[in-house]
Amino acid sequence: MRRSIANNKTSWMNLMWLATLAFVWFTFSGAPAVTQSEPQSTRVLALGGSVTEIVYALGEGDRLIGRDSTSTHPSDALDLANVGYVRALSPEGVLSIEPDLIIAIEGSGPPEAVEVLQAADVPWVSVPEGYDAEAIREKIETVASALGVDEAGEALASEVDAALTDAVVSASRDDPPRVMFILSMQGGRIMAAGENTGADGIIRLSGAQNALEGFDGYKQVSDEAVLVAQPDVILMMDRGGGHAAGDDIILGHPALGQTPAAQTGAIVRQSGLLMLGFGPRTPEAVSALSTAYAEVIN
Image (cartoon, rainbow, N blue to C red):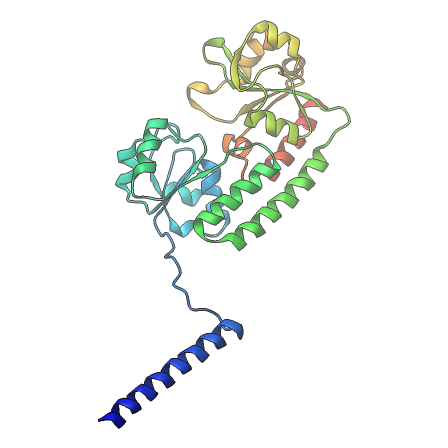
């Protein structure tokens, strides 16, 4: 009986010794540790046009199940469930499509809806907004990290950054034109872009200067302010609906009609998402705007 107990004790000691040797070998031999990875989200909701574009540019579009109404590029996104305007979200509508990850552009709203969604049992990642090259890189890296594809994010960010640098250098001018971005002209009232806006950012990147200075955001401007600004180019989004304004409305406006831009017909339009999205296609937007300025001014 004693021999049996002794033998069992010896066997147990041998097993412990072998386990210790195995641990030491795996720790110091460089053998890969076996870890259980987190499951990837397969039902992703993208809120914000640039966020959706980045997901597709990263090659992860097949994980998307929903988008907001500003997410119109690429065309594949139009087949996704539409949860409404990114600044007028309904928590019930968002949660009804059962996402397992929400990636939302900063400024999504309204705030009370975002609070409800952030309190729900669904991971929420906020993507910082910004209007320069650094902001675009941060957007891409944030989205890539949320999706668990950091290496692809770094590669895409570097590619876009290099293309944007080339576009900005090509767009640079010794005598930059004065550009006025008009958001809308409902009722003849001009809503235009000041500083710290997407419009101001794209105007500067495309080799021009904002004709309106001294205020931030998008504001209604007076006829006097328009006449003082004297824009060489009027820039607008290419869109329909109540916010659209044809050339005849611009040329017939009592203040705009007297500007150098109106007198030479220097009116440029571009897709709103392309121009103001600050995503992977921003280099394309910069090059196209720079070319358009040259065409309408010369």
